[in-house]
Length: 285
Ligand code: KIV
Image (tube, rainbow, N blue to C red; front, side, top):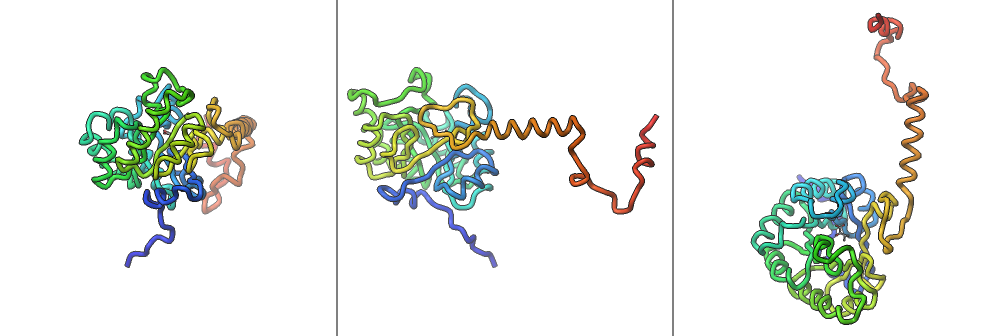
């Protein structure tokens, strides 16, 4: 007899119902250990393609592959129990056609066990979002600053700072919502525009640098833990894990060099006692 898991994982439908409800808490996760910690408090764990920069040290997210996303997606699903796990579609795996997007997204869903995917783009991606959503793939959209388009955008720039640019973003938000996205990430957007979009669409907006007016917030976990060397204005560093880790590594190195680690506490003995001088002698000159 199989036993039902005691914790039920959140679904895209649960998240969609949170529109105008309690703020949605989302964090990135790329590995099982961080996923297990974030899972205790977060509603959504995003296996973001930001892992290309954070984990692999690339300058941007463009070199990230589907295989990388699948491997990290599997780790995050294994490490978590209750949060909805969303995996980013990497650059080049969904833009060509809805069919190509379905082929790649269905592989991500099948091989990771995640609860949905995220892709970047607004009105231009609406047909693809509809195609995926109608075929059982929950889609989180991503508008505003879309990092996979960094070359076309001319850098990581805040969007919607002048009134004449607003219509395009409002149209993007409406298009992804009407196409069937269950939520939309809004990145690096001027507050008044993010607030306006949040009131205009029936699905939750999840902001990153898009103000408290959004229905939820997402943060790159390594940024808020203080693990990344630089972070944008919209990041609050809740701790300085890099400094804590550096101190721990320095202490370990000092202990090894001073032969203070390992001690008997960290050392295995034989079941029957063997005098150490007999052992060491056999290796001697
Ligand atoms: O890749 C990522 O981590 C993201 C978030 C910044 C939303 O897309």
